[in-house]
Length: 316
Image (cartoon, rainbow, N blue to C red; front, side):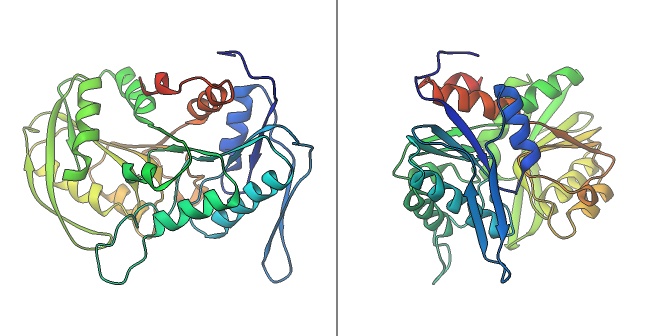
């Protein structure tokens, strides 16, 4: 392993939201997932119990908090159980952090769900947070405990470099994604374009214009998540009309809600590349989908955190 671990041991705990990813993390660390009982009472209430001694251990609770909301409750109960079992330190590892889109009051009388969730994680007993591609980077400031925010971009750029694409143009699907898309363009030695998009209401996107040269080029559309796929499917059609060749889409979090799979398969997209931050059931997979693992990335972050080393090398 890289780095010298500190004197206390570490334990990996998992809820039920994404057990294959947690097992991959454990394999990369050369350990096993801590035994946990997680079941339901007759009325559906969640019960968790840690079935191993974790007193004095450095505990990492790994749980993606995509719907259903029970995933969030499992995580909070596991953190609380670890704290009450006298863990030395509890780190909440969020491969996907739900409720991150509710990060401000953009309408009257709405909740700031992201701040509420941050408060709940801290109150449950987390000493630090390790997240992957938050929907809004300012979420780091919602916590009063240390936050390490990782990016899946190195995983994607390594994959697309191996493809050897020529005359590639990285296209930001909206203004908010421009900084991320520029980072992809720099890493892949590609040109850059941006889509001017309107969103008349939630989960509805309209492409107004494309700023940049895409004619005759392969295009890559990066985003942090794909929910209903309205944005990327409309973007792909707009790029195709302007003469783009093969169109690739990559996103860290594959929510694939509602009509997403149909939209992605119907759109002129050569390949959709996502990570396993969310455990996709077989019925949400399709032939042009490629799933990359972030297990090794998160395992390295856990290893460095346990050894009290910087995780900034993982951004390269």
